[in-house]
Length: 552
Image (cartoon, helix red, strand yellow):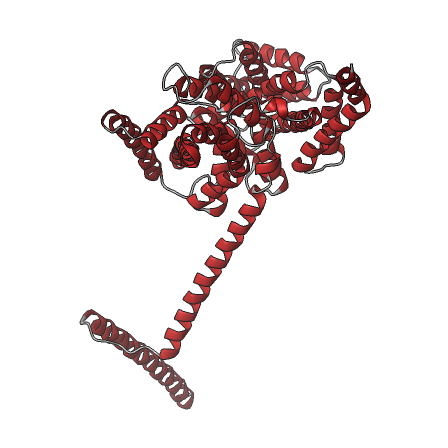
């Protein structure tokens, strides 16, 4: 018995001795750590191994080289992507927007559909050329640098601008368009027909996206979106004024936000509290038409005022969007790489430049300054882009005010820029060249486009912050719907000028739709395909008539 107790005591003593040794080792390690920390606090240099320094430096060099390689790769891709735009963007601003949507949303996937609609809405409510501002925004986002926006704009506008400078320098007198062969004018008309096909399909795709479950996560009613789209199209066709864009944007934002709030706070809430899930499923799964379902839901909502409140709170949606309701996903869209404060700086810079140019013009009599101030002021007043630039430039530089360009010279330039790719803002290069040579063309182009740069770069960082709020998302549904409605109205307006009652031009539009919808060709092929079809039809059915008329 005693021997057993002695052996047990020995085991216990050995165990305690081992634990004591472990505690002593830990104490020594802590003391060493404390000493190192004290040495660092006292400023004592602790030597580092040279191998570690080499590894850190090598890792830093690799990161720097990789970042530079990625940047150059993106820069190359940006140039390659935007370079064709300067040669195929026929049909005006809306056609250009449709080309951008086709190339950078559906083909290259640089931006999402939602991002594109937001960029379009922002560009339509700030001064500047709408399609160019969308291109600037896409370039800035993709390259994560303002250099990307500058390159995108240059690739988009340079070919036509350079040609207009040459025309303005050598051929500003006489009727230029009358000297071109008739078949060439028909080919230009056909390119516009191909652009119409792109606009039609782009408008339809944007409509489908605007009524998807994800896009309707805050408003939850395709009927509201469709109503705003058609109201916008009709009203803008009836009242084609630049200020009408603001009215329509305010109307669409008000309707979508008001409906979204009432639907969320009143309609959905009462349905959750008073209507059973079986009743709602019966309506949703029925074969009733859309408006009949809406009337049925309205009746269920009215019936909640005499029903008894349910005990369980079922989460349902309202109206026709019950089947499409999904949890809202938090998406992180990199609309801008800058903070909102940077956007405010851009707006402040614009205000200082705008006021400074006006003051300088009063005290300095220098023609280049006069030109830049006039173009900058005109560019600051144009909202939505498009044909608004034409009357403003005529008033500013024509006989009514500065008297620097004749009506015949201006009409020649307008005829040319209307038949060429790119935005109508390229007309500034022609007007500036006629007034002050090549330097005047450069001054005019920079002066008219610069406000658009400042406004879009100022708006993007601020919008990146605002778009996180739920009420802003409700407003955005209406604004996006208005933008789509304007695209539909542009289809009718462009059809009126490019097609009219010409059967062969209409066939060219249908052929463009076939190339894009059935063969799934890219936008450049669709534009040139429409032009070639129009030229072929002209040579087969109309060419002989023109020759006979000329002979007689």
